[in-house]
Image (cartoon, rainbow, N blue to C red; front, top):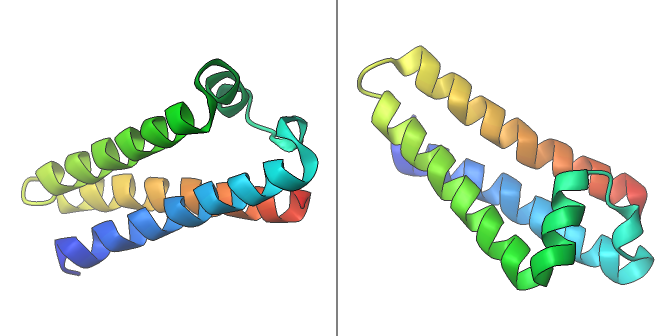
Length: 98
């Protein structure tokens, strides 16, 4: 799997998590969010701060994946899978909360 495609999957999973979060809180308010860390960041810094935090987390995950890939492919794929599953789980939980 090319690195760029793998990172695209990671970014897409977290983009859908972010967009479903925005729609969910627009409909039901921040109380609908189940992750207390997300609630804290959104309360302290608003949507811009949460967006920057999300971008930083995805960038860090992508960088760790890219650095690990030539050295330890299995660990790199585990990092990627964890990141993608985290984004997919966030999307799923946001959608069922709408």
